[in-house]
Image 1 (spheres, rainbow, N blue to C red):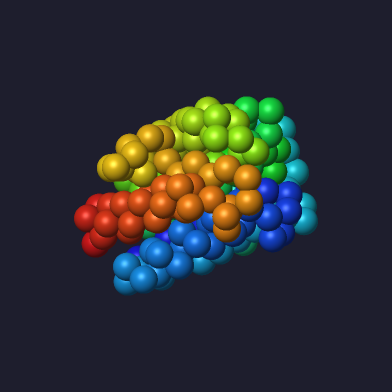
Image 2: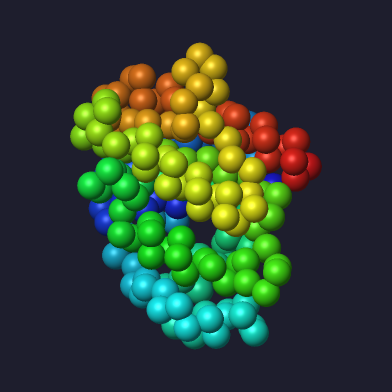
Length: 191
């Protein structure tokens, strides 16, 4: 069972990448395989709504999405992370999410039943993380995936990090919670 972690930050080694990698280390310690993808520096064009994917379940835009599609098709769980940009997910993550419409066209939902969880990194404790996590959860739900939150003792929408990730002990506790809950859900649902 593979959990794929995707950092939706334009920064290769920023807070979001750090948080996703921390989560993947925890998931790996729970006995699952992991893979990490950073969207930083990748060429991912915007979905144009042409719907050519309805017939072939492939996209007519040839760019860096191809290996991401392959990794997403292989995974049992998906850990998406985004910095908070204007209270929402980053443009990089939004473009990637939009381009995966091909997973759900023609009545086929390729990601159905897989498990997803989110991490949001903001500049302040109430800096838009909850709405960013709701963006990520809406994406999972539209792919017919199961959504995992961080659970007790906090039980919010997912992992929420503030400022420098490596210095945010509370935020890292939510990353730990969401990662362990994601691993357990993947084992339960996909095992």
